[in-house]
Image (tube, rainbow over all chains, first blue to last red; front, side, top):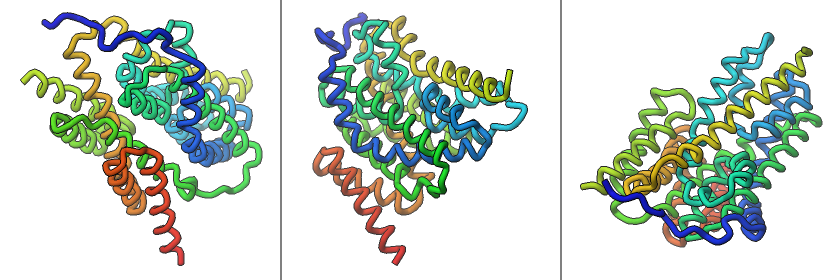
Length: 238
Length: 102
């Protein structure tokens, strides 16, 4: 057994306002692409019979677009409450891995500051933070600031979609799906550390492909991540 | 309970479940000693999450989305500048889309 040790030195100030401002700046260009999806969600929710204020409340409280769209498919009267909650858990389970992956940033943050920080840990804010971490930045404010910006945009655009409810058409037209994947592709390149990564990455990609065919929505991310992590450890041990 | 209030209660439940997923990974890590092996696992797991999301996006995306994905990869490898990669990828996608619409 190897000895437990500190992964990285603990920064004096793990979360600063300066970091939050940096996070807002980093994610501002992407926030523009979040708005059409919030509009589409607000519109789709009211079309499903949710009161506009309930749609806005859902975006405010839940703040996880993929799961919000997923439960709209289930929304009927009487409400299938168990199915809605289970679906939410399945679609959002990937966040468990996000928190673990960003642990070196989050560990030094005092528990009371962690609570709001973790509430806004969405895909984009997390991926942006991982990139910043890879560049050597150590300020969890980047996650909080970027996450809060996206949260406000998500609430505002949901409200606009739910209240104005005009036909905005297919959100794909505005390219969030494209920009998300392009952003994650760029983030992948930022994570590259050399040839040692080839085997874990290939394993992760293969497992994700299999998961896309075989598992419920969103779980390809979880199997891909776990398989990639295990292969990385096996390679490191060898 | 009125239907709207019930719907609000369901939203609160969804928020609770979602928050557990966001906080749960960090909470569990508080009890796991950070050995070298755990560190290696987490690092590869993190990049593998991103790989898996890209693979899913590539499979679900249309030709234009995949063109943007490839462009972003190429520009990022060449320059290591995220927003340059994104900008060029979006511009290429928009140009092809506009070209197809003509």
